[in-house]
Image (cartoon, rainbow, N blue to C red; front, top):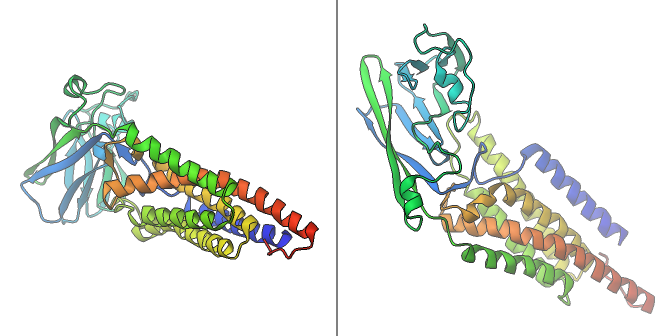
Length: 356
């Protein structure tokens, strides 16, 4: 039993080391919400400019501009004052533009400094050396916190186009118009989510407290590892402003790979009849699954999901991570206690006891 505990502690310490480097995994690289009832998209860029890309991030909350042309693009603020310059020498932001401060908060709740004046001469401050930038643009998302758009409040049972938006850009003498839309969709019924959640929690607990052998717990470890791996592989493409795309994807994969390794050890232990060891590894894996799933739990009650794969699979993966993770923590504790006591009774009776 001492050897089993030692091995499980080594696995747990290794998992902690990996997560301390990678940070909590999520279905989205760079943070933010993983689910929302709102969604935004760009409809057109007129006139089209080769090398200039504009896209909406975070369900309409942010706007991203990537300018790979040789000519600088100017982004006006809300009073048509110069706000951003995005070009080959990086990104420059006007410290006198009110938009510089209004865009710091999702709902624009910012006190403007005295020198924030749209009529003042620009005071350009370099904020990036790359020709790309992401910012909260309040023209692209719903600004009333806690209040639904009128058309949604009137009929929340169906999808709505909340509004169409435009953001102007200027490239030299060329006026460019970015047109997009913000939509709202009804969230999924809780009766589709909570029963499945309850079943998975009970399966994990039951496998640890009631199953006669550790094999059912080992099979649940495999299911949890599969959900963790899919969750990581479905990580969507990071924003262009993320410094290292490869590093961001690797950080999302590391916790999932750790979960697969822990599940493999647990499945092997369960097949060898080592119930206490299986329980300890179930406890470790359950915690790993919760670390990965809880940051994205909002996908369970949101209409739109941020994922690189089908939305339904993203919901299933997060449900499995959270619910089965909680069940494995409880079931792991139960298995350690039950199979350790069984081993102790066999030892007293003089029967051979598997290690762990």
